[in-house]
Image (cartoon, one colour):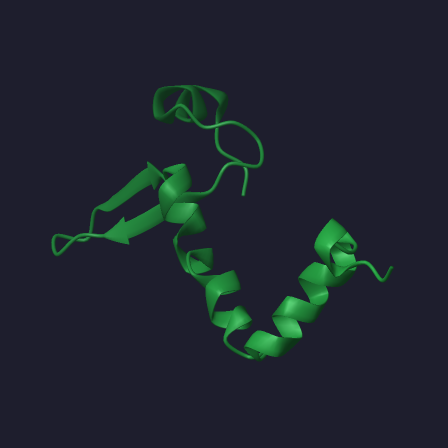
Length: 76
């Protein structure tokens, strides 16, 4: 959406920013830029939820593969 330069300056928004439109009971429209925390809220806990889909043994195997063997795990 394109906002007039004066409006975007007043709101403190730049190209690519996300804004929220709220229609009030009297029909007026309020436009507010979203805070970074509001934009990220849907993602909070995403990776934790995804982690529950693999078993502990699978996650341990992935970690071992990524870091390589520990000295105590190497074969003589």
